[in-house]
Structure formats: C-alpha cells, structure tokens
Amino acid sequence: MYLEHFGLNEPPFKITPVTDFFFSGANRGEILDALVYAITDGEGIVKISGEVGSGKTMLCRMLLDKLPTNIKAIYLSNPSLSRDELLYAIADRLGLDLEGQRVNVILQNLQNDLEAKYARGERCVVLVDEAHAMPLETLEELRLLYNLQVGKHKLLQIVLFGQPELDEKLAQSNMRQLKDRIVHHFTILPLSQKVIHTYLMFRMRAAGYKGPDNFSPTAEKLIGKASHGLMRRVNILADKSLLAAFVENTHTIQEHHVQAAIRDSEMTPMHRWSIRKKVTMVGGLALFAAILAGSGWFIGHQSQDPSNALKNTPVANLTHAPEVVAATANPTTTPVTAAAASAPSSTGTTTSVAVSATVAASVVASTPAPHTENTQQASNSLSIKSPATAHKPTIPPGSLLQQRLDATRAMLSSTSKGSASIQLFYTENAQPDRMEGFLNRAKKLGKLDEIFVFPIKLNGRSAYRVVYGVYANSDAARAGIAELPQRYREAFAPTLHLLDNSQNFP
Image 1: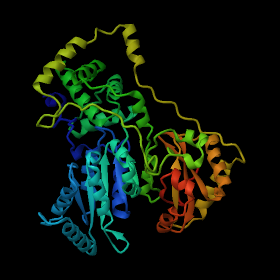
Image 2: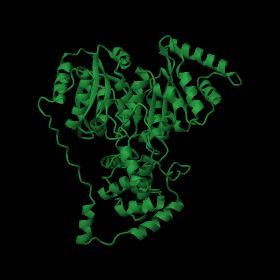
Image 3: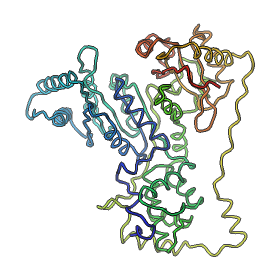
Image 4: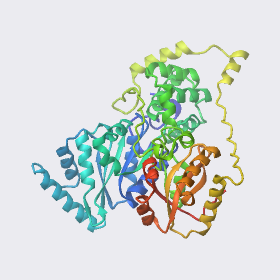
C-alpha cells in the first residue's frame, strides 16, 4: 500500500523469513559463521536459543544456504514428532523408503546410508526448528541417533533451535545425557537501542529505499522500547509506522506514528526484569571476528553478572558462571514470555485495509499540535544520547591479575601456530578485584600457573576472557577438557579456544 510512496520494491518489514533481509548485526552474523564452523570442523550437538521473534528461524534458513555442498542438511520445521515419526522423517529426507519398517530396521538402514555418505566425504546434519516443542522421548531419540558413528567419527550432527523453554527441558534429570553432549551454545540477543537505527535502515535499503534516513531518533527509541529489541516486534511496529506516515502523507516517521502503531498492534508488555536478564546474556561478538582469522572460538551468554559470582561464590558452586558458548553447562534461566505478534497476511505483509483504517484513525487522534519552544525542548530531551565510554580499569601492580596478564602475554609470544587452550569463561565487566578473587582460589587449588587472562571488549566495555592451559593442538585441548580440575568442570562449560601469537595483546 505504501510501497510507491516510499519508493520501495517490496515490503521491508515482512515477518516471514526471507534470507535477502538477513541482518548480520547484533551477533547474528557471528553466530551464523560460528555455526558453519561448528558443523564443518567440529563434533557434538549445538543449541541456539532465543526469545519468541528474535530471529531463530531466519538464522536457520541462512544456515541452510551457507553450508558446504558436501553437507546434507535435514531440516525439521515441525518438531511435534513422535519417536518413530522422527526416524521416518530423517529417512525420507535421505531418500530412503522405509515406511512400515520396524525401528531396528530403520536404524540399521540409516546407519548404512550415513556410513556410505561418510565414505564419499559427505556429512549430514539435522536442523530442528522450534526444538522446545519437541517431546522428551523424541529428543532422547535424537541423542541415540547422534551416537551413530564409524570408528571415532560421528555420522550425524544435530543443531537445536529453540526458545528458553528448551533449557528447562534439558535441565530435567532424564535429559542429562543429551545435555552433556551439547558442546556449543549460542544465544540470539535482542537488538540493543543503538542497533535499532542500523536495522531499520538496513531493511529499508534492502527493499529498495534510496532516500535519506527517515526514522526520527525519537521514533527509533520508542520502537526499541516497545519491542524490547525482538525483531518480529520491531518489524510489526516499523511496518505500521510506515503506514501511519503514508496516511499522513509524510516521508519521515515520527514518534506519534510509532505510538499509533503500538496502539494498533496491542502488544502485551513484557516484564522489564526478564528482558534485562535476557539482554545480559552477552555473546562474545568480538571473538567471532577472530574466528575467520583463526584466533578464537567463543560466543555465548550468561544468566547473571559473572563478576558477582566470581566475587562471592566458591568456584565449586559457580552454577551461573559465564560459559564458553553457554552461560552455564546446564542453563535454567527463567524464560521471557512474549505475546504472539499479529499474524502476517497471505502476502507476507503485516498490514491490511482494515488495519489501515485503524492506524489512520490513531494517527489523526495522536497528531501533535505545532511545536512551541517548550514542546521542542521536550522533544529534544527524548533524543538518543550516546553512552559514555567505559573507563579502563586500574590494575594494582604486583596483583595476581597483573601477574597472569603478563604471563598470558609471554605465553602468546612463545606459542607455535596451531596451539590451543581451554576457555573457561569470560566476564562482562573488567573489575580487577573480582578477578583477583577467582585467581586467589585458583592459587589455593594449585592451578594458578595454568590460568591465562585475555583483555577483551564486549559491547564497548573492557572485559576478560579466562582460559586454562596451553596445548600443542586442538585435539590435545579437547582431550584436556576431561582432565580439568573437577571444580572447573562443574562450574563452567569448557570448550576449545585457538591461540594466535600474532594477535594484538594490549
């Protein structure tokens, strides 16, 4: 309806997944690269979690497009399958006609087919969308399928996409065997307020818009606040805001257009504490830029500020310590409840003639009076301000933290290419006193010399990444995970970290 008005080739804010509109910001691109890396070069089950409307299905579709040709992807969009239906579905995707066969016959045929593919240099991965809705017995069957192997090599990889409720299922005692096989965890973060502008204009440009940026700062701020950064909600509000501007015959989306869109959308508010808790599950974004350069492997989230855990909790009881790809080995974060957004029309847009009338009425009711000096000042007070740059923390000379930073610098200068380590966790905030507490406990445990600390940046803040040991190669590091002190195995979710002696150590 408004396409010609804004010079668009197609609706920019469709809520159906279209890979041409994939937004690589806000950790989406890094997760996609990491998924390709994990599937092509690693083993183990992979889990991707995200709130309703955060972009999980879009990420899954992008993964299907980016996988190498020698990897056969089996995409299961309907997770509500029984155990037998799952086997039939996978066999069908592999081109095997096993309808009516007994389970043991199906399993044997699957193994034979997967072994033949492996011999030809082919691999298979099962992508399960909406995995939180999969019955427990079906999830258990996936684990049994993952056990299929030839020699030391797994024949089938599994990637689970699900809402936070998936973590609750995996936390059940009868799911611990499946949970223990999940080696990589990724969390899709909501869009932060400072990313909203980039996202909105990316979608507009992808749809053919060639004009100046047309969402005002106050409009963008209100979209971010009302949507809580969830992409589907952002899309719905942006789409209806464009319609409201079209009705008003203007090309600039103002705050009152967004207010009209909010009223029309009838979105159920989300609990602010839940959203804040979810947003703190920060992904290690900077490190996945390093993946492509061969210098790092880590992305994840944390269920609470890890610095608090490091300060006040014994190492053995760090059940919420940050993870290397997961906040904890067994996350049980309370899920955020999000109301279902308005369903798209058959054409994939989020508006209709009936909606147009509603939005138009809202616009008329909410159109502001001409600005006076006072109202202009009030409007200016709503403009988005850039956050202050975090100060670099002061590290006391001679402290354990300074000693380990120096040791890490020396270690990097002497390691050979291909060396690896075991990542234990990262901190969201670089607070030396809290790191000092962890290092003191490591000293009492007799493992201080094995601990190395890297200064990193997370969302513009100074932070630390903590790794354990130095190994000749990645295989030795993987084997070393089983030899970690019991406290570290219980408290953290260790994973591989590739060392790079060419990286810049501040």
